Structures are given as C-alpha cells and as structure tokens.
Image (cartoon, rainbow, N blue to C red):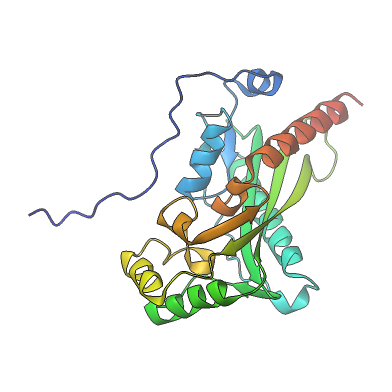
Length: 241
C-alpha cells in the first residue's frame, strides 16, 4: 500500500461556460493576484470567471493585538488590508507587476468571542458542542481588500477598496455528540476557524444560514466582484484626473 498522502485540496473550478463581462475583458491577460494560499479561496475566485488568478501568500504574521480593536470585525478588516499591502509591495517591484491584488480575512464569532482554529481534538469537540448548544446563530465575517495600482505618481501609488461581509449560521441543535465526535475524527475541520467546513461534510451540521454561503467558505464572491469593479473604476478615473 502506498504511503503517499492523498491530496484533499479542492479541484480548480471547472466550467464549460465562459463568463465575459466588461471587467472580464478589462482583466483579460492581466496579472490578477489573490493574496492567499487558501485553495478554497482560489476556487471561489475561479468561479467568478478568473481562471488566470495567481496566489501569493502575504507573509503577514496575522498577529495583530485583538484587544486594541473595539470590534472583532475591525481586527479582520485591518488584517485583510495588511495582507493586501504586503503582497502588493512584494510584487510591485517586479517587471510584470500585478494589475490587481485581492486579499481576505475570515473570522467566526459566537457571543462576541472569536472562534479560532481548534488546538487539538478535545478542543475541537468542545468548540463544535458550543456552536451546537448556542441558542443564537454564530456570525462569519470576511473582510475583503482590493488594491489597484495607479499610473500617476500620487502617494501611496494605488487605490484601495475594502468591504466587510456578514453571514449568520445556525447549527442543528439535535446533532448528537456521537456525530460531532465522528466529524472531529474525520479531520475535515481541524484547520478551519470554528472547526467546520461548510462546503464539505460540515454542511451536515447546519440548520440554517442567512447571507452569502461563499462568505462562510472564505470569500463572498458577489461582494468581491463588485469591490473589484469599484476599485478598477476609481483607478481609471484617478489615472486620468
């Protein structure tokens, strides 16, 4: 039997249909950078009709002091902005510099507490039980940042747009401990904030969702598409002012 590990990353988004809007035409043959190493975010980006997207991990340590922020989503927004800037500055000096950089940071909040990735199976199970037992939905926030370089020499040299998307998710309270234990053992949610992957077996945990499903996966695609349009439009306007 082979000892090779199975590749569990999601496949590239494959569509037999080609979506062509004015923005798709504008970005055709352009360098589009997703400031993330997440295969799920890359797949969602491809779903928007950009199969040529490149990924670049920011290297930003994501260790901002949460206590300095009034709300958890401000922490996510600042992290997203810093990721985008880090990647833009890393690639801007290249001969083929990026035409657009998109970053995102997703957090899950229950009763004002940020639910991080589980530390170990025991912590993972306790986290899932807490989500199941809650009488109120938990909230998933994704902060998206878009950078478009400017041709005119005006500081900081780029246009930046940001957006915060909120989705409410409610676990089914009838889920048994046995089921949660089985989910922990399968390992799917061990590296996910909140301890579950809604696009996989984790969907079996969900009773209801209010808002954008793709936001819970890690990138709200409609909001991201609109934000890219706004940033490109402003970038074009500023270049001709």
